[in-house]
Length: 495
Image (cartoon, rainbow, N blue to C red; front, side):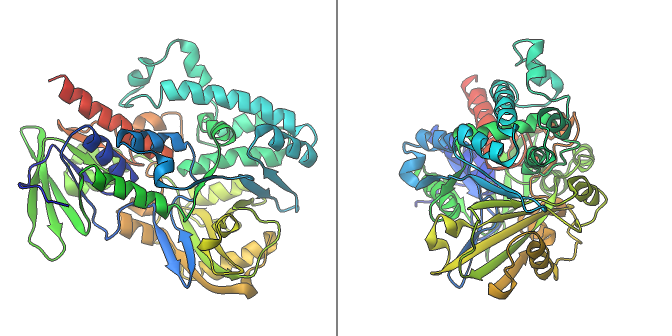
């Protein structure tokens, strides 16, 4: 790829996570000259991969929902998502387990799931279908309001509401836990619904019931896997960005954002083995955590104080296990629920790793044999923890396998190796305060309005990623990049 003849571009992107990659592609596809800088050796941010002894683990996102959002990005670049990666729609989508040894499998079609639920708990199938109708309304309303633009204040949302009823339709006044109490008579299904709060690193007793729309998204649009692992999606984003002409700089840490006269002017970059350089542009998209931005890259005392007062999302401890042999009854995505979900989140709120956590288990080799050696499985286990990089994780691998053995499969005698990733690792690699996985939490009615706005305090500065609107996770980060680049291109068109 030919390097730009000067260090001046139309736009600079700080951070090569999904938000940064999508922003770069969208701007380059619109004809802008773009350079992207990533401090790590690999692009993709938390969309990362760990390989060992023939076992492959997605260490960040492991589930793809709303693939149409990414397909839109690829279409703008003259290709398509299915032309770049091999998508697999999962059926079953999830298998759930409870301490009383009960289990239920969620299928690709809502009616099939309802039938499974009726066998699991008579009457639950109808409750599930009723809830899906409610969740679809939340999603459809949120899509044209909450996800349609920046959210600098409640007024931003009010302008996009067609009527006062729209606010009621997004179900923001209830918590997800209270919605579960209203919608499901079986406590296990209330626990299932509450788990959707964890998709944004939040507590179901505090997060708005709006998050329940994810149930409809999974049921109607599918739970997807990218063959070869979600690292293949990262590779596709990098490949398409390069094809669009984005100049990609790995091992290149932005040390400062330069500003003059209340607008951005460029960035200073420390590239591996080279003297610091300055790159110039009147538009900067920052895919770094907002706290890192306002503390280190563009010191701003008031904004930093505001960000530090926003509740962080949870962090997590991931345990990767290379397992010999095959395990019966497990699916690609599995959840072993704790006995006391409320206690689990109280532990997290009080700064403790839950003593008896809910365990998520992804075994992608169930779907894709290339992810593990023959007759083996790649177990990726994840629990929610406080966002505290001081948390000790040295013995967690052994402890979590002991805990899993009391709830489900005993992997201890079949484990070839056990590796652990904890909050400290996340904080150091991604400059994510406390190791928060999703940026800011969704706890509380005002959480959506307290996140840093996409439009920054200086002209030409835009934020994308999990610490800004609309939040963390692959779909929402992709939406943040769409909103930011639409603002950039609209501003340019109006001049």
